[in-house]
Length: 132
Image (cartoon, rainbow, N blue to C red; front, top):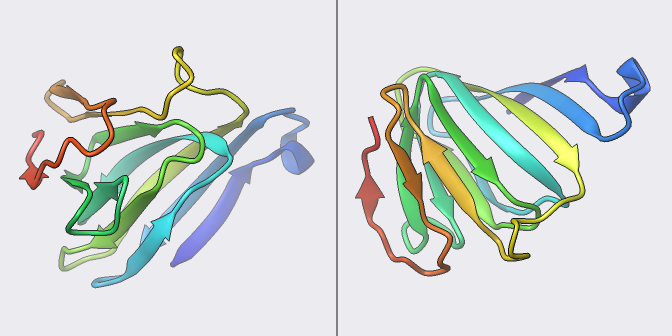
């Protein structure tokens, strides 16, 4: 994985915001992660899978590619896997603090064609959903 910090409190004076430019090599798998801040992932190149709530293939799994955005509330488990034949590139916008309006874990996906998929219920059990 390559990661470049574009903006951070140390670099910009911003109090709660970060921007990262990241990429995964072909076949690379980040494993299951959760983070203390809100995250918005914007995918710019490549093709991958994002599994939410649990490790692939048990989680809610979405195919991701160019112009797909995924928003995650803090501490939501997720996994990103590059399944394409080129690097999977994306920008991560992070803001520390905050939860969904009702205090639960939630997320949404929007594609280049404006199709929005919202699944705030844990364990919705989707296989792979194509949102573009």
